[in-house]
Amino acid sequence: GFEDRNLFCKWGVEAGSMWDLVEGEASGQTHCDYPPEGEPACVWSHPVDLHYAARSLVGWPKMWFQVWCMDVHGGRDLAGYGFCHVPTSAGMHEVDVVTWCPEGTAAEKLTAFFVGGRPRLKFEEVIHAPGDRFRLQTKAGGVIKLQLGVCVKDFDKYNVSH
Image (cartoon, rainbow, N blue to C red; front, side, top):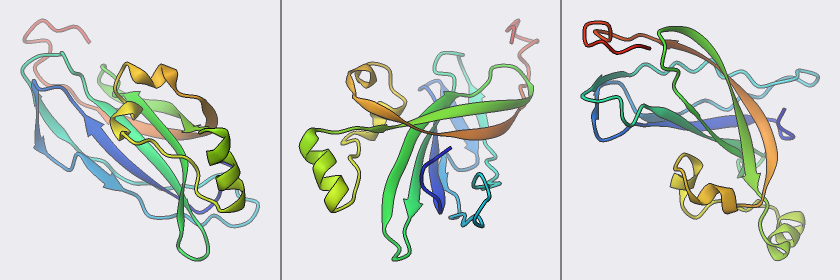
């Protein structure tokens, strides 16, 4: 789990240029959960309801996440970044999203220890875009457990196996 408590999550969905968002919000934020002492995890129960129309399967949607912790003064600090691909088959799916945090330089670690404020990404696209993420020095965050319901329409009609 996450080493911090009092967590909230910013989320978004990225899809390719051949995908049009017909209905719903492509990004949002959960409430901050303050679990009682002894509870193992935060529970957000945040619904995400999206409807896409696709002209191609290229650019299948993926979800990105930023988990933040809030202190007693309302200050926010990063608890983890993560992403997952939306499952390609219809039905209910349980997806574990493993999160990570940038470690930063030795100076950033020292500053974070004495002043607070963990290192953050300069470009948030790195969370879900292929390429530069492999260069980052990171440490494990926690795991976000998702329950996703996926509906597909007319895939059989167009001979798309899913």
